Image (cartoon, rainbow, N blue to C red; front, side, top):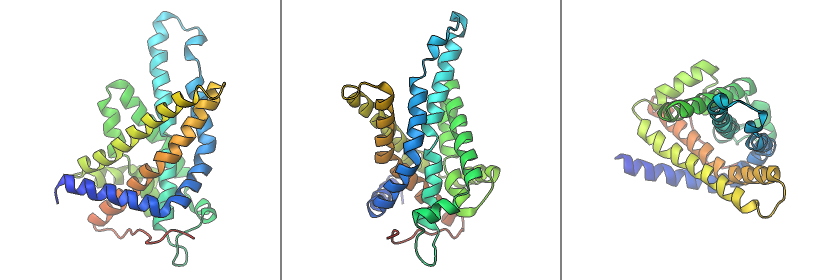
Length: 247
């Protein structure tokens, strides 16, 4: 099967999985992104230029702002992808786990650490020369599902992601990057639309971030999990998806 055919197949499976699991995916997204959307909105509204830096530090301040915005934009998406991995792959007495069971099963320490480290590496790479950030985004993008599917540590999860992506780089890149870019574009669009409705810029940013995450992050998470499961099986592993969502 050629790359184009594989991409079509993966995108179709992402869409079907999203439709089948939409209620639980959206509920889980609300739990994760209501508080994290506020964190991102506060970062967006921080006026770094008003701190009074001299002209010599303005470029450094701008780079720091880009770094913070990129990192906080990714924070939550990675954690959410790990939680979705539990929902889609871990049976509880022959059925998918409920939201309460997912909360009890999440490996919070490793997953939060991966979320923060991954976001920082991608953001730092984008600030430097763009390409390193893109490479980090792709090569390390499956670490969160790996933690929850294979119960690895932080370093092993990143290493496993690299091994899974090896020889399948373009498939992973052409699935994850467009979804991430569409999500970012949707956030900007919703922000501009809500600016004329609410007087508070903070409220606009919070609402825009939440709505964009509800609309697109489940697709990103499902894509990460499907790719991880497929590539684990391709390497001889035994990861499987549930056929039916939790009732």
